[in-house]
Amino acid sequence: MEFDLKVYEEKMEKTLSNLQEEYTAIRAGRANPRILDKVQVDYYGTMSPLQSVANISVPEARLIQIQPWEASLIKDIEKAILASDLGLTPVNDGKVIRLVFPELTEDRRKELVKDVKKKGEAAKVAVRNIRRDANDAVKKEAKANEISEDEQKQLEDKIQKLTDRFVADIDSAIDGKSSEVMTV
Image (cartoon, rainbow, N blue to C red; front, side):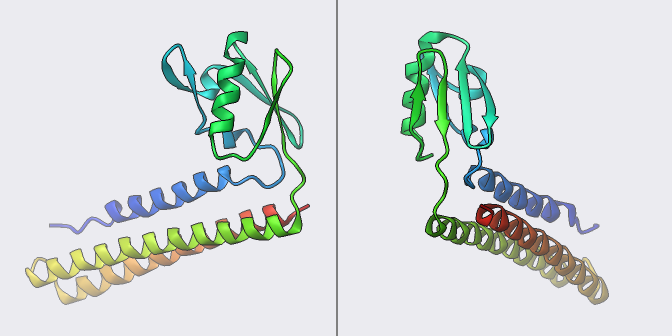
């Protein structure tokens, strides 16, 4: 039986993409329509993603404009944004909703960087847990004499290299988001 590293690599890949998804929700003083990805709107009794009931645009660096397909949805969209934990107050003129991103203070930027690092550390822990699971599986196969000691060492080496690669990717994601947050 051939030991399959792909399974563990995919898990690490998912961890990294989850981290990058979480980072899109962290606002860095610039308007990013991705922060609205998790906002759900009550559309005739069905919870629907905001993107499926409105046109979302970024006319200026610190402004998101939401134009619902139907004018009757304005109140529901406003409610959904207020209910989300975005910390933004929607302004509506009857036709469109505007979300204005305030300039971030230095303290708020530092807080966000701490949050970025905390999420990054959690992702690294997840990757290391996947490494542990992979190493345990290798040891189990070695104990059952399904692979030789040399193969065990080679696999553990490959697992470590894979882990190092993903930890480096996470570090660069942390650095990238941190510098984005600290940029005025």
